[in-house]
Length: 363
Ligand SMILES: *Cc1c(COP(=O)(O)O)cnc(C)c1O
Image (cartoon, rainbow, N blue to C red; front, side):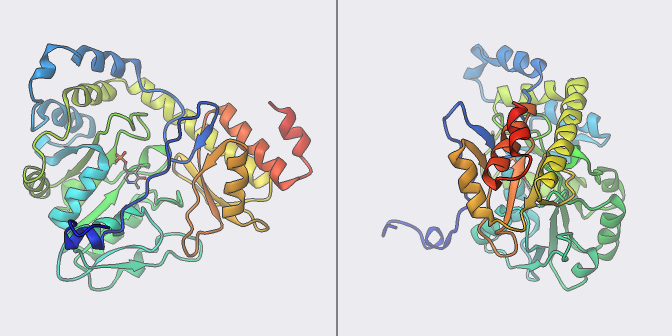
């Protein structure tokens, strides 16, 4: 707190990212990173950019990357916007499209960055409770609003809406911007990018951080009607002309070219998720049906905070949110096989369950 701060700075309540500790023996299941690596083609493309051309600014329009994304998703380059991670794309979206007199609607339990952006940009917002099954109920959004944003699959629940349900949401709100944040869509939900062609109010946001194992590269993008993209570009060019460096643009293009790596990686995460979910259920956890690269689970007899702390003592880090309705849940990233085993074994030890010995013996 300082007298040099602006009035706005005093009012901010910043997002708190999951920690990034520097302990190599740690089983790090707290920020939904990929347990597999990025494609070797990506690494080669990034290395090829490490040369004299780093003297020069990158393409401010990222035309080659936008063209590659347009081809990949079967839209036109004017329908594609790229940014420094989808968090930046979302920030520009809030400023460009979601600030209106009527409130922005989003679920009460969702990506906790949304209320942070509202505060930063002075956006009126209203939360809509998830139903008792922790699902987004489209009918609950039938109320006056200036815009809607929904993460699909939702975070931190992992629960997904079908394309049909989002089609209904769009049909009921033709006159306001509707943003679907598809950060986790590749792990088992249906993208609504095909609906962009018929819905000028739809913006779909995706990221290379999760399903393409590139959280460290910072590449996210949005796909929507050219008019929506123009709004994002106006905000971006009022903020930072060069959000993506040359290595990021080249690496992202290469990621799109390695479809086999992508498909194999997501299949492996989906397999791991099913094994993790079964293991947790076997230990007595209630596990929400996840279409993401994490699961959201609670134990009927143990508080979430206590479990998270006990796991931490065993060098396993998961995410716990001390917020209403979800304080008893743990959000656990799907790790590789060894990480899943270590998590289940640590939990089994903590719970002192009957299969403690068996799970421990597995590794
Ligand atoms: C991880 C995540 C993002 C942002 O990811 P970036 O790394 O900034 O691309 C956006 N939305 C949701 C719901 C996320 O979980």
